[in-house]
Length: 189
Image (tube, rainbow, N blue to C red; front, side, top):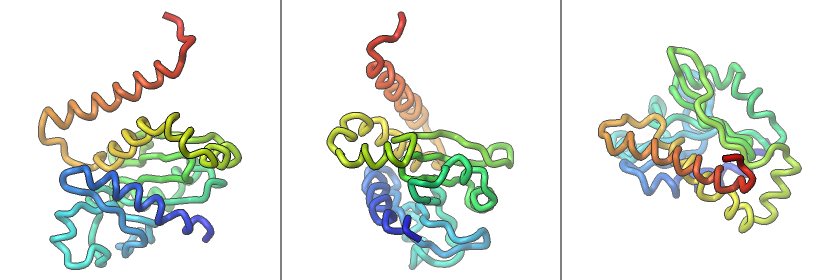
């Protein structure tokens, strides 16, 4: 599959961001399936790594969910409602779905698959390739918001055990809202 050439870059990005979290989160590409098909990636925590001798071992349920990666030509919203993603949600609880230009956090709410949060880099494959052709400009435009989104994706399945953790999530959404407001110079009062 041609989208597999993007796997290492996405895994490195998620693992780099995951290093800043406690426990650390690591992205593993091609984990063993445990009865719901074979996800493209798994988000495991370092405490899971020490609990199992091999993070790719069969039967390990990734603490932070799994990843399904499609090519930029794929329609992420269609994939989000697919039987494949539904099976992953039922087994793993959380799926980070991406076609590289759009990221969708899918979770289980009241036992049913639900879209939790979306981040769009570009609306079309053509716009995506144009945007990534100038990474410095793209980083200036979406870097901080995309980073916040990915941290929220890695923490989505984490238990909230303190008011500080809840406050971080609320502040993260507030930072995103402020960035959107600042980017719109012509907003009415």
